[in-house]
Amino acid sequence: MRACRVILVVAFAAIMIAAPSPGSNVRLSGAEGHPRERFPLSLYVTTIGQPLLDDAAQRAVRDWNTLSGEALGVTVFRTVAARADAQVVVTFDRRESSGLMGEAEISVVDAGVIALPVQIVIFEPKARGQTGPDVLLYQLLAHELGHALGLAHVRDPRSIMCCVQGSIDFNDASAREAYIAARRHPELRSVRAQLVEHYDRFWSSRNTAR
Image 1: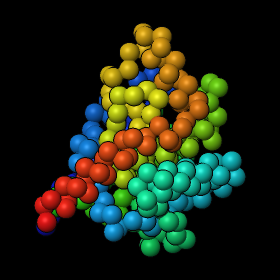
Image 2 (image 1 turned 180 degrees about the vertical axis):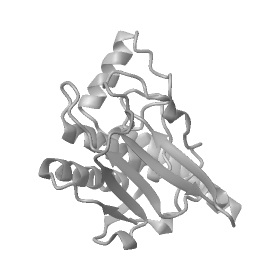
Image 3 (image 1 turned 180 degrees about the horizontal axis):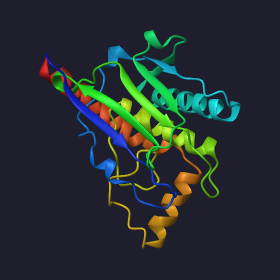
């Protein structure tokens, strides 16, 4: 079956209190995912060459595996040394990209199954206000890996998978403070409920269709 190609571009604004750029209009429907037997996905992450950033990238992967093990009973990623062996490929780009900080390119085939490989590009983050580049990289990679698993944007400003464009009212002090706090102190466990609900639904729909 011919793949229906969906390009997901996730944009983060140049300042941490701004809403996502129009690139975030293109988003997953929430019906995409991976069969359980496919996990763990082989993952290749390009080395940046800066220990602080490389450690942040490795921590994002470890945290996803810890969370998925607890929530789904499977680890979702296993790192591999060769790009050619990877089902998910993460590369880092030092170029400026008009405010774009990360993007995932995803193809979807039969019954919402995500085609492999998934390509992720992270544009090298720079410190923004009180948020260091390692914190930015962690949340960017954690967010894009969420998309690689099929997770869509959500409206919760505290979530790693925030945000649906226009869903945060930055004139509302509580919403603004929640968003800024989550960007400065990203917590992957913020997606636990979304991950469980998503794969309960996706795996159940596949079993029903058989």
